[in-house]
Length: 376
Image 1 (cartoon, rainbow, N blue to C red):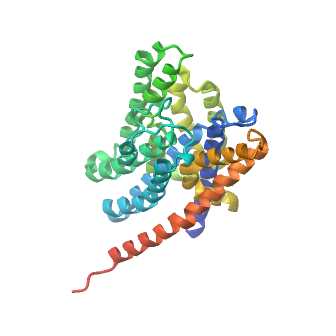
Image 2: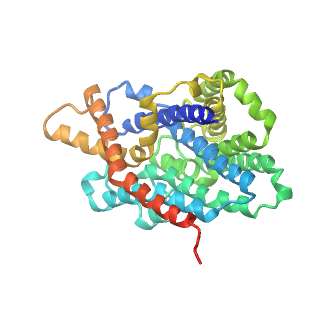
Image 3: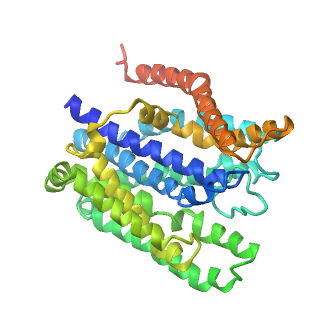
């Protein structure tokens, strides 16, 4: 049993590391960079979709196991754990952005209340208020953490057996909304204008209701792994085949999404990317796949640091490149890139030791107190 859990997390660690590398390469294109980064980082935006699939799979899997083992969900405990994991590093990053102008990669921030309420992804004008814009995905995840446990808690037992149908409907709903929005609004704007990009990001790319593909795919796979013995058995016996299928589908998805804001990418492309990563995630948790059997210290560390790196990386890259420019060093070559990436990892380690470890100790003390039986 212990071996199985170790292998499972090995595979997911590889994928978390891949996701943060994809995001870093994609966002690095917004700074001074080597020419080849344009090509290598072109599809890095799908790293966020991989994070969504991973979150949907892991969070739903924990909730489904709790329901199976205890017959209920301890929502209070779930929210406490999520609070201590998500909020302290996030609020520290917000503090840096709102009190230290030199940390900002751009000039203007959205209002603080949007960050505090995790609603920044709605109405986000990335052209005029693009600082800390990457927090949009954290907003979607936090909304997911809020809604899914409550949905499972209030869902009647008789309806739960139709949960797969519900998730498929949710995925279809998100796809149909993108088709409608593209046809009725975005497609009518000049593709070469800033207004097109503002509208595309604001109406299609950032809103929660248009980006449910990844989370929905993760939840669907988590449900099937928990409640379908035949499905789980098939996954555990076909891990490498699933990986090849996922890579093939992802190649097709990249071809469809070659131009990220095209009609095909903006409608069916997001769904195809999510499904592709869904297959790869299943391969990563398969007992027989090379992903689950191979352990790597590097990917394990990158996976553990991925949240802190995601929060801070734009500010860190901006500061490093400003320092290079101040001292007259070249800040658009491969050396600058390596220094920036190493700095992102170093700051991720600072988050770990300054924030995450002390907060985890506090969380463990609180949970230990809550678990302690009362004496009368």
